Length: 410
Image: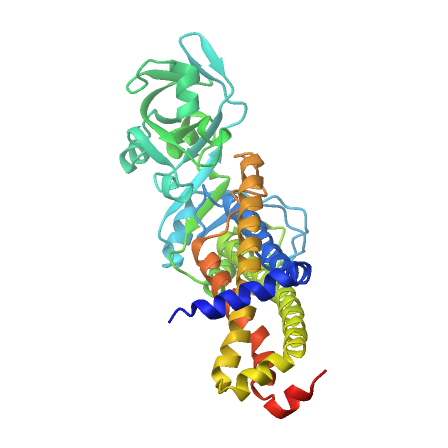
């Protein structure tokens, strides 16, 4: 129940000691302010790190041929390895965990022409599943399909920026572009979250490119998704890949340079674990700072109890219950910590939002620093709890004062 007299008394006590109250509250406000700013900064760094994976499936494993660095079965190091279609098919048959799969054959020195306009766009020759691995979203027409692969069709899916450059306001679907002098029919237009470079790409069927651009059955890179496989399972899959390719291409599976494997599962988990540790550290620092503020508030409340010893004794002599004394001290403590902490919370959120407005949208390492609603609620709960803790010991001391002793206090 609202006790108007108690609140008036608390207000009177605080107004008599403005400077002391402000300095006491500052330590609490600073603790909450630093906690919010650190959490917002941590979120900004985490968003920047996650952005590196935004256009790539985080459960994918990429395999690229390299150069042997270890002797193996009488063969000297320094051999360059080459993958082909049979390697791609073999791995899919050996590893049942694979869900989506695509190869890439690299087309050098690409030149894309339409209606007299010529551009050096990136060319990627892939399988249809590549759209899921690179998170490619088709917005017009379709992406490459299995029929294109099987029949070695001369078709292409182009990025939105490539379409704008080549066709301006024209409809691109059904039109023909020339890639290194060879005509390809545009069957789709896609968007990609990876930025402008990813939307200036032209996708072609890998089998068509192998045939036209002298690739034979060569594959430069293979990529696979592994479903919901965890870190340990993904590492086991990586081991199997090395063993199977080592058996076929005659290299030591322990030779890390023979093939290069980019395990996105491992990379993403490392990022997650890193920021879990950072968040724990931030909360630890913030809470320790708040505790320092709580100690300050508690000490001040001890001084308040000491100054009001005689007054408390008179109250008890007139019949005041211990709880009425405890509640008075607790209410004052909670008020100071909550008000100061709320100010620190507002200032922290305000600074985070202000900084967020100056961060470029395409920043690679720090993006959209923010403090979510749950964190704000948690901070408020911490403030109330902290205020109660800060006032509890002084309140108990006040309640234990004996009237006769208090009345003798000078």
